[in-house]
Image (cartoon, rainbow, N blue to C red; front, top):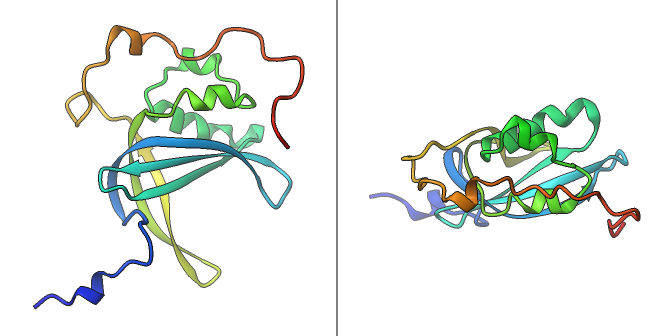
Length: 151
């Protein structure tokens, strides 16, 4: 007989393995190093959530670029993607990709962490895009003259 306590979870965290996820929210964060970052909250079909964070420094932007690409954006669309404008990141809310989650040990605790991501192809639970969805969602107007970030 299976023992229920062996499957107990202290939260609704994403379990290890491959998951199809949807971006639910996004926000700017600050790292202890003083660097700025962006955090995407993703959720799978079982309502399990995971946060995926990226530091916004030049030498690490490749990692964010691979994530944005997995969400279906092209290289040309990424040329208009301003990492410092929350509006560009918010355009990715509702977009889907697949992620691989692994348990990672840090400071004596285990955490769920997305270790890779890839684009979902039509047919993998992804409907054909509509004409409106195929248009670039990234704003083309000039950024505001003042800093609109609340910190």
